[in-house]
Image (cartoon, rainbow, N blue to C red; front, side):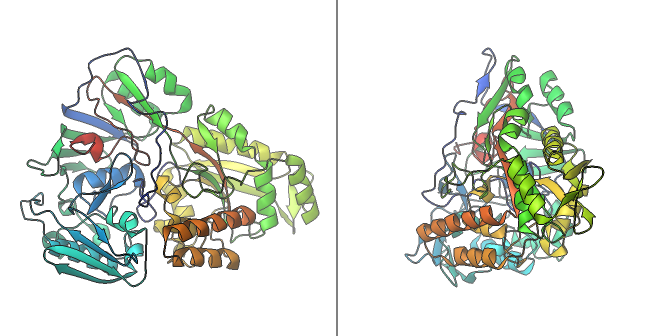
Length: 546
């Protein structure tokens, strides 16, 4: 889906299995920077611009993976977290012991943590949280919990036993699942409608004010025992238009823009005194997705022909000004652990033309090919508030037009696109589109089970299968991956699945844009780039977490 990823898909937290450290490129001290000014590491208040409303900031009501989940985890803590190097580290837990067969996980808990309302945090809250997510399974945390056999409390530690080995469980769940207060959530029977009063966590910030579609105020949690908040108050303003948000950054009305900076504005912003643009590797993807359950996209030959007509290198050079990576036909970023780097996108309009000819797709009087009595003319959906994506859609339309396929760009608001591609974030509810520009954020590229989730036809497994692909070979490969019991075997299975995705072409991975985030370093310079989370995360805002 766009730069955003919905709560029932995947967060933007870089979920990496132990030992799968990802290098952050070109960001270190904060990227390209204007002439030196004061670089304060604390601030009484900071205003952040976000593109849309994020609900009441509970695990069931936040909207996007980025920045919604990032804001959520300032309010709600997890048992484990990932440090700035994306390695697993304790948070509410003081440590983690894993059994040799990756089935039993023991987590002793901190004894000095309180909820925002002053009540003590206990192991009972953790047990309740796991049971609650399993009972109300409309959030992504429920999927890895399906393999939980028992949850027990022993000597103050929580012991989670799985029915089968899962070597990615610590990062896929324990570092991702927000812990709920039993005394608040035990009375909430419809979590999808959880009120703002349910946003009670143990995190470094309390949600103290919320005006729907306008703003949030987060206030530092006094006495937070896991570090000291560097900013006293965070005001999160909803600014839908990217250009408006960047203009507000220039004037100092906001001090950080959560969205990425367009490539054509990066140098201009970085040259302004008091503004810093932090850049780094970013594993988010931009895809052209087909509705694989709708003719003619139910035919792999058609999908391959369209893919071959698209010049992904030109998209990177033109749209991203070279500040990105060409997409792999196997989806996996070539720099991500487990990538099959032998896979390469093929751009060959002559081959695409020949393939369409072979299918019997004959050009009509208007030049648009006709296949099985139907013109190859489709709507191409794209988020209107993403200028880069709109321009990419326009270029793709031109490329397809050269081989006799008509793609009419339909720029729509994000909610309208989502309703057609991923209604209610539930692939079981089907889809109503021909073509769309879409995308997934970094963790989809670093959690092998989510690779399976992109293509498995069973909605309970293929929770990210927005194309609706149904293919026995893909299903078998996804099942093989999910059945592996070691990281080495899982990585090997992921390699085989990448090859099969490249062959079946359920979607076209166009490119992976580089991350670029702008902020007022003359107001607060504590922002730290973390792959998969950008700048907006606890390590930037809490001393002792960086």
